[in-house]
Length: 124
Image (cartoon, rainbow, N blue to C red):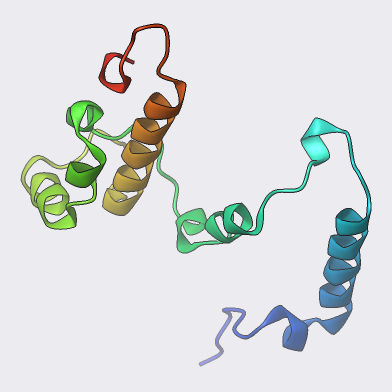
């Protein structure tokens, strides 16, 4: 049976493309690019974007119940997964239980970052 999945590292599979990617990374590193849409993303952001989450489609939003949860509650995977198994998920496509946690965590952190003018993160 033929394996149609691309397995291996890009440097081994397509050295020319790998070289071009390295050259472009070097160009961006050495230049001051003032176009906002072309600003360099930190390595941690690029690692997150290249994670296994890019393989799934999670249309919709996480369960509304997660809005009021603190970060510690959101990161209680056992609790989150038990809730998911019991009540399912409001999203159209299933199998995104970990994406729910990531998005709920991002929502919580954004609320905390932008809470101001007498509002707490829970009010946002």
